[in-house]
Length: 525
Image 1: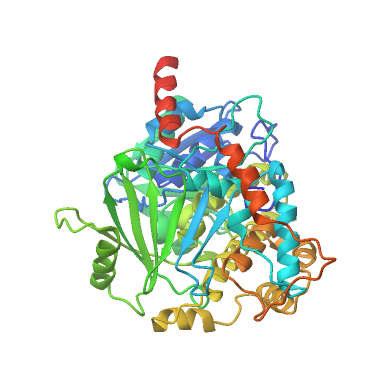
Image 2: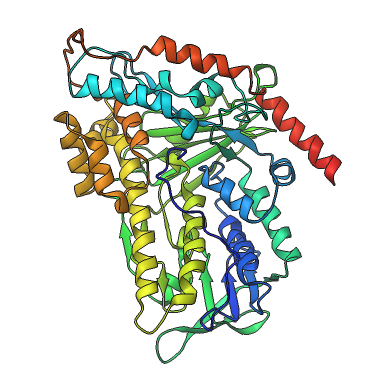
């Protein structure tokens, strides 16, 4: 739900087996490193497993991934950390979904909203599916834009928090916005309190055993550090998984062209309420994010260096957000888009940027970190000489990366902009997978893509509703629709809108809800 295909929620309270590592060395910090530390501490920290995180004081973090998917709710639930504790500490806000202005130029489709949703939305989803089927398969002129059919969209539009009070049957899923640096620091303090050893040091060499596994790392200040399991959180450098174990990198650059980003903050809009959505606005050579935090907006421009120079990108971003203060410095970042062929090689698990990265259009980076670690915790105790558990984990995580790539790619494939060669070239790219090619063929022929997605459930990360939202939201419909036949049942978007708007009064103002968290957290402490 919440836009992603439904999956199990892993339990971290696991029984230790003879295969469970007795010592774990996490090389590198940042949000990925400290997420790994707290998840391992929760699962194995009380079972004689020594967990150490070593990071260098000389290496900074990317720190611009300031949005999540709803999976992060499961992360904090499993750790028994309430929102009133972590959200104020990280300047966090609620996220109802993502809005995509200016990707389409089709009349009536200037923007679309990717909603989070739950079983409470079933009635509205059925209405949406009905009209999409009429519009695409029957070629009937009916309203099938997804924005009309999801409560989440109305919540975001009215700047409300997605928190239904007790006694209201309707519930909605949601995600978060947060300061990535503060989140890493918060998780660090939790990890230290749960017994994780923290060292500031720098790796000078990596030593391998005769069988190729990592035996130890040499450090500047601590000598040689050995462990049963090494977790590579060294970012794009991939010190362990790449430079040492030489695990191949599978590039997505032939289907996702963006490889650079520039980030700039802007002050909050105190008099306009606090937004509860991410804005992902198409610009000339990529797209710009706008993420609301309690004390600022995080802004950035993700673009392709093939079409745009960094100085040009910064100037376009500054103009877009109205940030002309030269004293506010921009951060320029390089991105390597793709994944390792295997994230678990020998006794090394790659997590975060060392494992892979897909541009932050759907805010999936931390979801992939979380699911990699949770899946590893589930599979590792079963790892035997036959390597089946390892093979299963690597296949699962690779499929998740490829599934996210497929959905992100679809945004570019469906664009109808013609103002720059960048957008025209994005649209002309061949499908990034056979599944994407079949989805487009099936959709354009008026076929049943929901059934196709179900048949390929092991390869699909996003739910059928999300796929219909992007196809319908970008206006990918047959031209010259006809009036619906008299016997065709058409869902009235005005009736759906009235139902959705009637629910809004039960949800609090977003800023008030966030400020209430800070108050309740202070009272609890």
